[in-house]
Image 1 (cartoon, rainbow, N blue to C red):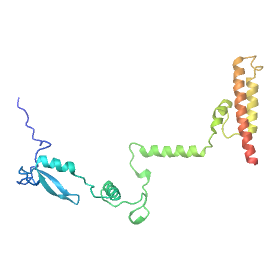
Image 2: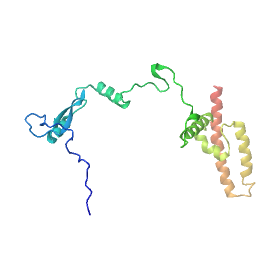
Image 3: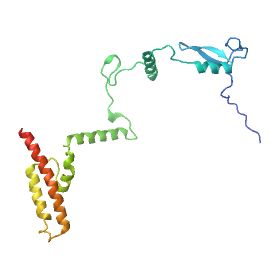
Image 4: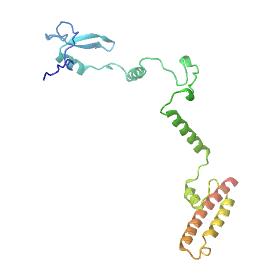
Length: 203
């Protein structure tokens, strides 16, 4: 069986376009097969080295040598935008206002924009709904009350629950008695909170 000949160049093969000359390293007589840029400002002008000396040159190469930290940062920022001018999102060149695309006109096969719209709607709804104070979340759940609630409504609802779960009404049922204990504790917490709110408003 014939083996297929590998025509791909190896990683360290000399450049086929290398000039027929000796290495640019002084006193080196090896053939030059590998190019390296002469400087940061002359990236299209090359030295031609042998393999040994191009490795040495690359090991010492520092593109940012001689630049200040500010210059390096500015250069990196320029590289990020491919050396093209940029402007603030939503504005065009010269600072003019830029018309934003309409989400409805954008093809969205993965429904990414639809998910964003739903997330924004949920956040808006959560912000519009009154937040239940953390200490009242469990007591209100036990009492079956929604927030906000007035003290008068809480008392009315509590009396109805107390009659429903009173041991006398349930023929001494211990489970009903335990439920009533929880209802009493929950109402005490809610009542104290609402009374404190009323005092704050009065002040």
